[in-house]
Image 1 (cartoon, rainbow, N blue to C red):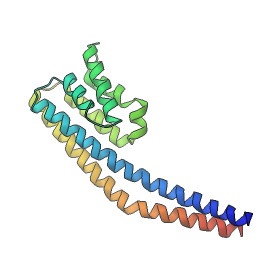
Image 2: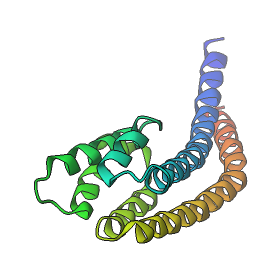
Image 3: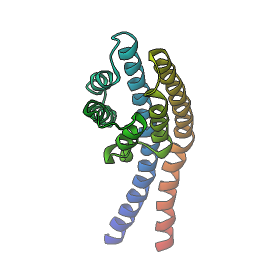
Image 4: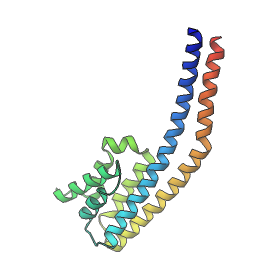
Length: 172
């Protein structure tokens, strides 16, 4: 009886690991959707409300979810301080925050860094163009992440379950 309970725990643990790996892929798709939403809101703040960057970042930061809210509010606060730091430096600090590092993969964080490189030194039309370019890149990354999720999540779940069965057979 105890042996059966052990086998059940092994199987459930391995199946859970496979499901967790698939869930990580799904969360990346969700984060990229949120990133696109953030970029659209930021673009509309600059285009329609004619907000300066710190104000646009703060307003958008109050309307989006974590980790993007923390990213934008941190960047807005640093821009308002006016310490003489460039926008790429502020973006680098904001992207390096622990919350952002945990929530986004390196490829997605690089997208934010690139936006910081292009956004701060340009006029409004070029800022909007930079946001549009970042929006397109985020869309492309989301499309790839969605395909990866669709292709690999089921494989991860099956591998987890089969790995658990393999261990059970190994212990028999």
